[in-house]
Every structure is written in structure tokens, then in C-alpha cells.
Length: 82
Image: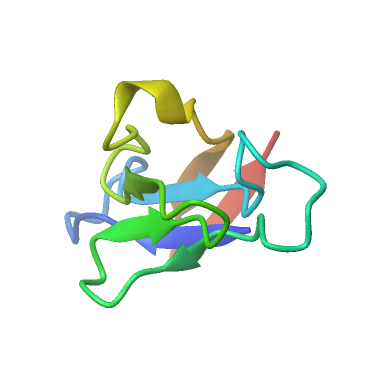
């Protein structure tokens, strides 16, 4: 799981949490999403597909959508649920 802080407002929607499995290559050894060198995208090593960290949207339409988990930020604690 990758947890990303998108804002610093102290609100419940400050964080995003994503599964690290590439949706197109699930189960393959290369299918673990990593943060790319720009720190703005998650990248699948199998085919270099990328998803924007801010909202999880794919860079290319045919890449599929990554699994996003619900997050709540309260009293300095991030709770992630599925």
C-alpha cells in the first residue's frame, strides 16, 4: 500500500491510499507499483503505465484504474480501510 499526503489542510481528505498492484498485470512479479522519479506518479514496471498520485487516474485510458482505499485523518492519525 502507498499512502500519499496530497494537502496539508488538516482535513479528513488530506491523504490518498492506493494498492501497489498494477491492475493490468496483477499477479506478475513486475506488477508492483512504485513512485516514479518525478514523485508525481505511480508506475508499473511491466509496461511503464503510470497513475497520478493526486487522484489515482491513469495517464493512458487503457491502463485501468488502481485500487484506492478510504482514508480518514483525525487527531494526527491516518486510518485506512477497504
